[in-house]
Structures are given as C-alpha cells and as structure tokens.
Length: 176
Figure 1 (tube, helix red, strand yellow):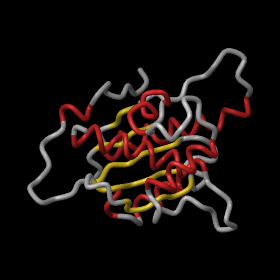
Figure 2 (tube, rainbow, N blue to C red; figure 1 turned 45 degrees about the horizontal axis):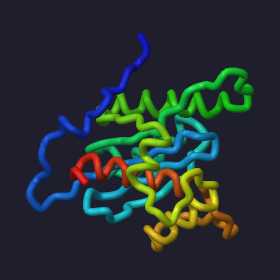
Figure 3 (tube, helix red, strand yellow; figure 1 turned 30 degrees about the horizontal axis):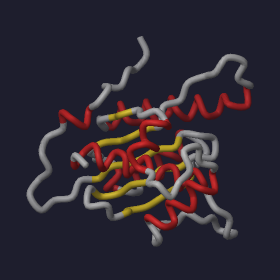
Figure 4 (cartoon, rainbow, N blue to C red; figure 1 turned 45 degrees about the vertical axis):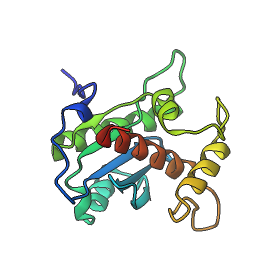
C-alpha cells in the first residue's frame, strides 16, 4: 500500500512552545522545483532549488539541522492527467522522493492542491489564473530578502512557489 499522507495534520499538531519558533517548509516538487523553509513567525530561513537527486536532497537537508525537525511540511499535490507526456515523469519521481523523505524524517505532511494553497496565500494583486511571472512578482513583494532570483539574475518560479507553499504551511500551524 503506498504512503498516504494525513489529510490535515496541521490541525492535530501540539501547541507551539512558549517563545519558540517552529520550522515549516513548502515544497514545489517539479523538475525545476524548490524547497523553502520559514519559521512560524514568517521569517524565511532559506530557499533552495531541487538539487537533482535524492542523495543530493539528503545532503541538503542533513547540512541544515533546522530542516531535520519540521513542524509541518506542505508538498504541492501532483497527479497525472490523461495523455500526460513522459516528460512529466521527473515531477512524479520528485513527488515520491519528497513523500519518502517526509516519512523517513517523521515530518507531518500535508499535500494541498495548487488551487488550495493559492486561494489561501495569494492576495488580490495576483490574477485568478496567475502566470509564473505573477507568482514571482508576488513572492518578491512578500519576501523581498528571499533568494528568488537565480545566479544569473533570472527569476526562479519554483522558489517563488515553494515560498508560497511554506506560507500555506505556516498558516495551517498558526491558524491564520
């Protein structure tokens, strides 16, 4: 039987420790996806591109001790569409890698559909059917110090989405 994440683990989490900040993460599992981590206060800890393999992902996580103990991980739900091309296979593989890592580390995992996290996080400045550029612009306004741009200055929409998904996870934990 495949791993089945709980539908809403954020609701059953223990209360925050007084004065303490828990870590939540948002994951865009696409082939050019990313991981974003933030404290429940909203402070961004970091944003990282998908490293390319499960082994490199483990190295990234284990090199960042705050990522080993996560209060809630939100992984954008992925599902195949009829007639979907094999080029999307990497996205499905990454989705499975993330689910396995969450299970291994004991992260509570929620898998919101793209429309669910967008409705919860995006504001009226973003069109109802946003393009990648709209999501990048929103993330740059919301988290101006976060590393959304790549080394060559190009926008990384996977990073922008991961930040928005992390914000979704944060809101699930703090109840906003």
